[in-house]
Amino acid sequence: MAQRPLSSVPRPLWLALALALLLQLGWQLVHREAVARVQQLPAPPSAAVARLASLGEPLAMSKAMLLYLQSFDDQAGTSLPWRELDYERLAAWLDTAQTLDPRSRYALVAASEVYAGVADPVRARRMLAFVSASFAQDPLHRWPAMAQAALVARHQLHDLPLALALARQLRVRTTGADVPPWVRQMEAFILEDMDQLGSAQLVIGGLIASGQITDPHELAFMARRLEEIAAKKAKQNAIPGNRHLQ
Amino acid sequence: MWRPGLIIARYTLLEALRSKLPWLFVLAGCAALALAGFLRQLALTESHAVQAALLAATLRIAAVFLLSSFVVTSLARETADKGQELLLALPMPRAVYLLGKLAGFGALAVLPAALFGLLTAVWAAPAQSALWAISLLGELWIMAAFSLLCAASLPHALPALAAGGGFYLLARSVGSLQLMAHGNTGGHGTVQQALAFAVDALALLLPRLDHFTRTEWLLYATGDWHGLGLVAAQTGIYVCLLALCALCDFYRRSF
Image (tube, rainbow over all chains, first blue to last red; front, side):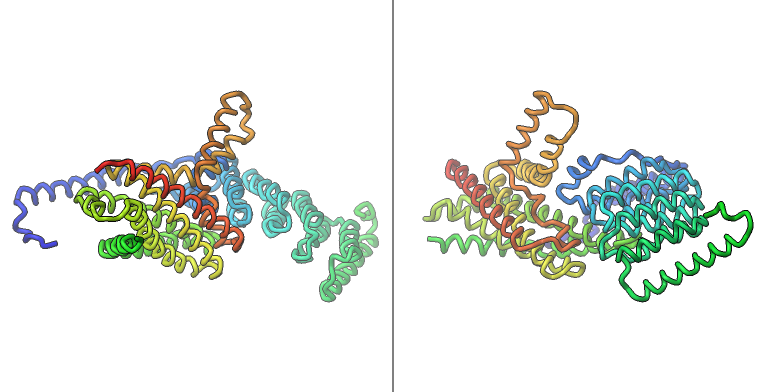
């Protein structure tokens, strides 16, 4: 399509265009200076509503929800620390995303490796509870997040009973061949940390006897572990007044 | 008798090619790639899955929007400049004209399906991408047929576009609506039952487009030829239904 030269546009029109552009720039500048306020995390939509809104793309909706959630702590012009996030709502968002795409590990990784790292133990425990509940629904695919949750309980929260409870769920529910043996051995190591050497011996002995450990190197390692525990127990027994620990 | 129909199809395709529509498809593909690539950088884990899921959803919507818009605006333009009346004055049945147009739009749909299918093949197994692309073609054929029906029946482009958009939203979400209508929401009264019945009746009339072009095929390789066969059968049935509706309406119209 042929066009006439720029000079054919009337001068007042150019002026009006420049004024409109200046008005837009001024408007944006004024609004940029407005004080940024932290917004709290809203309640998530239910899985049914999110599925409806996804127009038959629940997987894409799940990813979009997780990215939205992830970007929430870094809002425009300000930053919201995790310890100020409403973790009940956070868990609900993660749960909705997980429901929309149950095969994805994204929500569990975010819960166990990111949001559980918060300095507030109450909030961290809420994330571990979410991971534990999700693990119970599909243990054979969700054990990595549960193992991470047990480590968080052991090393970050220093809550050995909680770590033990999580590790026990791992041993009981992950009996498939695809799950590496160390996952089932976590309970024994935590028991050892708790100085419950007799229980640790029982768990390791049970794992070997049940045939769940088949690799010769793994068997040798566990046998060495049993010997070390036996030596520790003997040492404890040798100290007067320590017999009550058994 | 069908030779004029083939010529109409060819010129419909030529019109699309000359109106730079292929470049719009390429541009949409590039924009979707850029957006999904940016969001991939933000992902904590499963970054490939994040990119593939968002890319596939964006590409599908872009393909449907561009093709439907073209069908409606092309027919509206042809009606406005009296080209349609000129063609109908030729010694051929009206069905040849309408089916020729439909064939042209159908041939045009191969272009975005193939292009976008190739793009998804970067993140998914080639066989799954092929299933996704063929299924997208079916979805596009249904949308092209519905847009043709709307454009041939409604007097203006805007109502036709709105009707196409509404149909697409419903066909994509009717499965979720059924789940909600039959879900355990606490209400089991007459209103709840009537609502569930109405949604079920609506679902009988619509194609289940949420079973088409599924992102999980790309992410978890769950697609198979049996599933594609069901998609193909639904496409065949629904395109025939829409074409017959359009023909009935077209034969009734006086020019």
